[in-house]
Image (cartoon, rainbow, N blue to C red):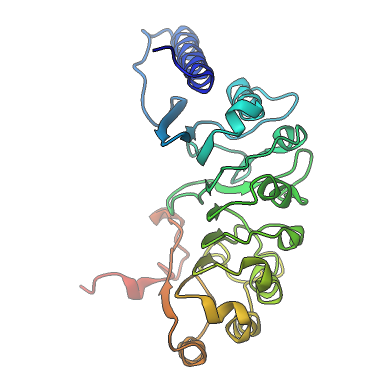
Length: 308
């Protein structure tokens, strides 16, 4: 039986990734006067896909940047593949990840070229673009082409192409335009604040009608307690969380995880009392910290270390 048009397109792109990876390893070996290094999972491009009924689950791992002058042709070719209506119509789940490589402490996903094609993803139910690992050197964010640490509405444009989304994971808090996009089927949302929470919790409290099916929210505030809240690293104020817990949206939530929230124990207890049927979990994802970078006063979170 001949492969479907979607499978042929994905297999061709997968082969193209393997060829470019092999070429890059040969060039690196030549530059370093070495034999060709073996491929490693973390450094190679990966395109993994599996059928789900009549649809497909597609997972990409590789460099994140794609602009018109990009030196990462594979991601640009991936976006071209996704812009094919035959492929877009067949997707059920889509995920993106990549190596810990970037510039100025950030690893940027640029989806602008895809968005400009205007293709729809009518059957896409799950979209995952996760945050970086705690020990990563580069924070992950979605950026509009030509902007600095700002999606400038691109996240809103992206989710608008998939109005049937049931789960959504984003590495950085979206531009306020996101909250004007109805996602009536969305049940799970996992959002990282990245460099700036962009008033995400306050906007969510006012826009709950857009997410009538939402039952679970996982929100990570600014990068972590090692980066003290300031004008450059603003943490979400308690009043925003309080507004969310008073909103109609909170009535339908069954579970919520708050990560790195700058709240007191009393404030957490107050939120819990406001919605006692909601399962509220607190977590702290401390960023990695090199021992030789500790301040003269020592490790800022020494109470987490074993005594002795």
